[in-house]
Length: 266
Image 1: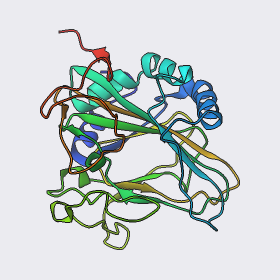
Image 2: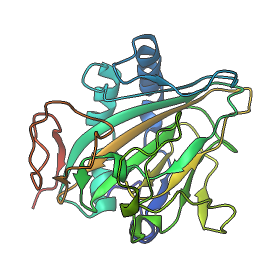
Image 3: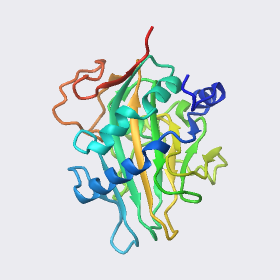
Image 4: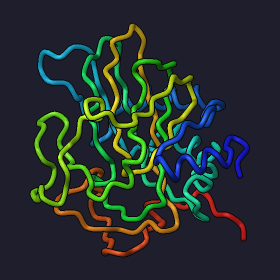
């Protein structure tokens, strides 16, 4: 077990679908910050500005850039994240799925809507983890996760953040997006220092408040998968789409696109 973890944290992740890992990227904060600045100055094809006309601030996000941004690759390959992921997932192997940068500049009141990542992805399996790590101290503008939501019978309907429309045509397979605060759900939220990370399952319902502070809120997210991850077809284009991947349902994610970064020795 990685020294950043305790058995109690692993148990909490399995039970709640979310846990705080203090200091996961603490030795890599400046590297990640440099990568985020490079990403924002040289955005990729999936970069988005997530504000409607008249909404204040700036909410930038972009993903799938780690192979072209050397700072991100360095962190993915050299930080403790892969081993910590293996411990949390109970997996012998860890593959990269993708990276994601989310930046809310000061005065950005727009919240990140409640959602699960899993329905957007073409990955099936329970051994998966996302790490969400702020590069600035966060208090009231941290990630918020609903404990136990990864085990709900139905996934939450994925929507387009700006248009607020359904992502897939068949709504009946999904439950409507709940209001965790109004419904009294167990919402986990932590004050965090740069390099701390919230670890959560792809099916854990989560969101984030706007950033109404005078400070930036730069977040780096890393999505990893374990032994049981397999390709699954969705009823429409996935996000990320990974065009031309050529995988068939039930297939392990191809290693040349989603490399193994940790292998536990037997």
